[in-house]
Length: 472
Image 1 (cartoon, rainbow, N blue to C red):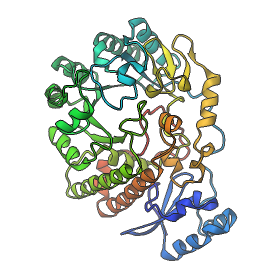
Image 2 (image 1 turned 90 degrees about the horizontal axis):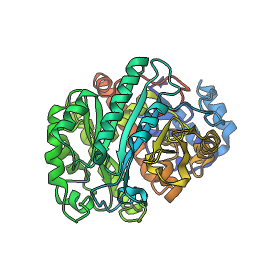
Image 3 (image 1 turned 30 degrees about the vertical axis):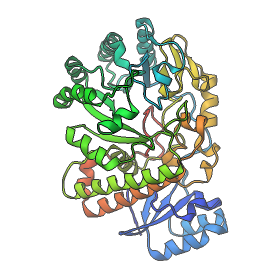
Image 4 (image 1 turned 30 degrees about the horizontal axis):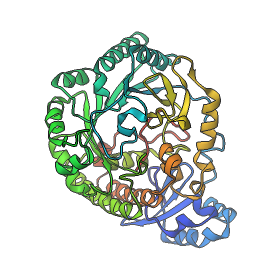
């Protein structure tokens, strides 16, 4: 028996549905033979067929029998994730809704046309300044922070973005604090001057694109009903040509109307995007565009097809920047294990145009995620309740799922507003990703090391303020 890098499971077998010990381990087979995932700690081991058969037979006998069998083989026995929620985590990331307005009329918009259900407005400078200063309020030297700009369409308030960035750079420089910047935009207002600004400050720029040509136009029209694709592509080309320090990525929100992922992925990669990623639409205020079970089945097939091409290209020594695959492999490689899906409501918050603090950018103006105000800081009592309630082991059916410490229980916003319709999809995707990880590790570990930078995360490392860390 040999230990692999920490990781996750692969086959979506019926062990995932069993009570008791099945929640604590998962068996899968790949071309490299049987493997075992110990869920707590995301520990991955290559095992022999005999132990695989023993574990499968013991699964229904109870946790004590499984633990005894694992201990007999020198496995398990150490806890990585405990029962207590995070306690008063420090603020390390903010996303500013600098514009609660938008010039597009996307059919599924979680921000309800950009204004979050209220009157369209921009964030005044005073709120942006208070937000930046709040971000740095309790940060020590060399502790990294992140400042993001979202909306609505954030570039409708370009002056505040630039002024806030420059203030943050000045404070970070004075105090020796590393800082990262990001912006998510629909691309319709991008200018060559934006390219220069984003390059100077090393922005991660995410452009929302939902397909090629007419497919995108149907999902992301202007408020007047015209298409936006040609304008977005024309505007983004200068950024793609300029990117050296900045990274320009495409994010595709997947609905039942744009499930042809492989063609979309190849097209955007050919245009020069740094990465291209897909995110299923699971919860929309209007319910339009939401993925249903049959759509999620198709999505999984399409995602795996993209993953297979990633494997082929990687083994051929080529670059194929499929973001979902890169994220999954990195999480497996690091042995990520977490009781939450992301840093929302922990070290990461969204700020509304009026200065309200919310659990993340999706909860802006939503009382379900209200967490205080930038002028007073985080409401610790609300935060403690949130972190206690949202732990994955306190959720159903998560507490009985082998994938819980990689998934973290799913996006808080989507779970609160719709539940968990995508669990089978997530398990299936993680299954595939693990098999790919094992294959790539066995065939070309040197390529995997270059494709997925960094080593494994130390055991027990805390959840960070990463606002987009979910494996799927």
